[in-house]
Image 1 (cartoon, helix red, strand yellow):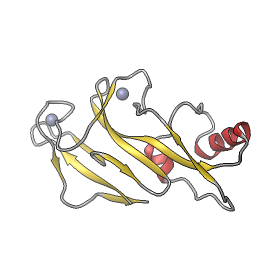
Image 2: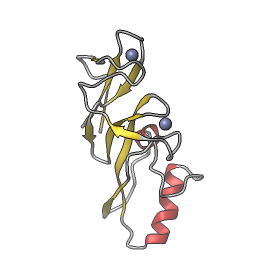
Image 3: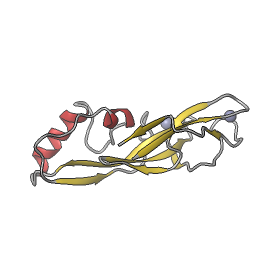
Image 4: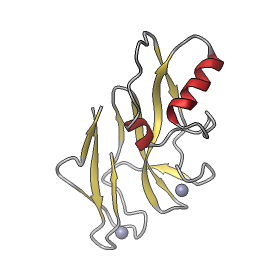
Length: 138
Ligand SMILES: [Zn+2]
Ligand SMILES: [Zn+2]
């Protein structure tokens, strides 16, 4: 079970709804990252559980259709996409694929892991974490 928290900066008011660390659920794992170019926090999808059909090409096409048709496979899906993904039906074998954490806006952006307690990407003061998770996900 993964948890997302609301992080808030008391100085500049920046807010983000992220895990604030590495989290993993049943079907995917995330790592919260700070993008130096966007000056934002994101939950980057680092691992994704997909049906293992034994056929790489067919599997690739199917995965692309499930997630988002326009994205090449080297780009990880974004957090919302995997969260809203429908469960696979009739799949017996799964495997995990890994992604390098990257910014959902552009994979040329420079990102680094962000593990709470940590600083605001805008102004550099420590961000406050909500006591209660904003969202739970599987
Ligand atoms: Zn701030
Ligand atoms: Zn970025």
